[in-house]
Image: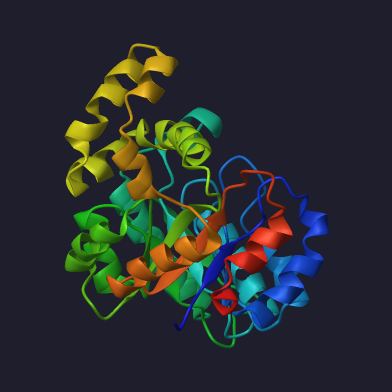
Length: 319
């Protein structure tokens, strides 16, 4: 297998305590470290540290929202990481969600497709060292030029959950990042992206033989995500609209307990990788066999398993 990524930082472990684990990743067969940005660490700081702790790893944020930084600042941070990890940094950008952008950051979540497209086009020019003076549909840049453009501009991949954004990624980006899907969903996504671009997906992995515990954790996670409009629409497109409708109805009515109970076991088993480490690795390989280029494991702690042990047990070299 060509790529096997890990989400940083690991849940429950302070960022400052990651060094030993990150240093071990290349020897275990991990090729990538991908961060995220919701309500924990920012997307860039863990990657800056990892660039020095494990210089062999490819690094990327999955993803940085296109709304929450100005275009110029986003270009500066991308250029900084590209300089810290020359040839090993991939910039993942996307709309994020109306919850993060609007409710948490007070920024109107307007015209997400156009905003992503415009940001992508601006970043292409800025990271190539051009001076940008351009009126885009969703913002304007008047004369910005990076002081130190990367010697090799980083690839840019787009968060894409449905056909429109997947097609934009195919036309103008270097790949797509998706999330919350089952192995059987990968061909549907590939059908819009095509076969020539990298497809990256964060996979939530709960390495425990206690299926009841894994499903209980998974139900909370699914409810938190699938009630967000962008993810609800994604799973309607994938064909889970009817299966998730009772959860969404109960959630909208404010009945959290009933919402959790309404999530079928088969939906949890589709979307959460769980079981023994061997079973989890086999499930991850199903995604790859179905067309996923880069699986990025997000380890979900359960059953008293130490995070460092889980990282070792789920590594491709462990099997």
